[in-house]
Amino acid sequence: MAFQPVIDLHESRIDSHEALVRGPAGEGAGSILAKVNESNLYAFDQACRVKAIEMASRLGLDCHLNINFLPNAVYEPRACIRRTLEAAASTGFPLDRLTFELTEDERIADEAHIRGIIAEYRRHGFRIALDDFGTGHSGLARLAALKPDCVKLDRAVVKDCDTDRVRLAIVASMVGLAREIGIKLVVEGVERIGEVEALRAAGVRYMQGFYFARPVFEGIARDADIPWPAASMQTLGQA
Image (cartoon, rainbow, N blue to C red; front, side, top):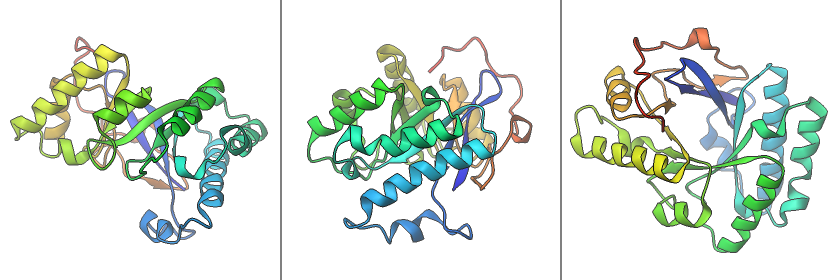
């Protein structure tokens, strides 16, 4: 696993870390995911959850942990969550610090099934995020149907938002929407200070991307490692 922080720009602190699958020598996720198929999907999903929780605990992670999950690998929510609960119990990792991110490339054939998964996860205190929002299958219809706790806006939407008024207008509308319906908005893929400042001016509070920190293989970034931009605008509304 590698871990990449999500930062809270208003409070100049790391809000959470996203666990990202890697090979044993740090190989990228693509080389691992290419080996996942219907026969090993469930085992892969379970192994990733357990490894993420165990490693986060070992590294002393003291904030929220975000784990990508594959809803099509979950055949029965209560049974499939068992190893997650066991890993959290054995490591002492608090359940209310776990957020499961629904990946955008997951096509959901049975919407009632995924709503059942979300209900079971929330029963244990977990939160749900829609990852890579604005691309693939993560759109407004899924947002309305699943009512997640968090939306992660994909870089494809926000790239060069400091020079593209259309992209910045989309971000600003998402800030307003997130505030109106009471969900957390995280902007992914922030790579330049110009983007940081444009996003901050639009009211974005939570950001993730290479500008702040690249994924750390078997390690975690700390608050002191982040190149915090000067003078956070505390008076802005929170997204």
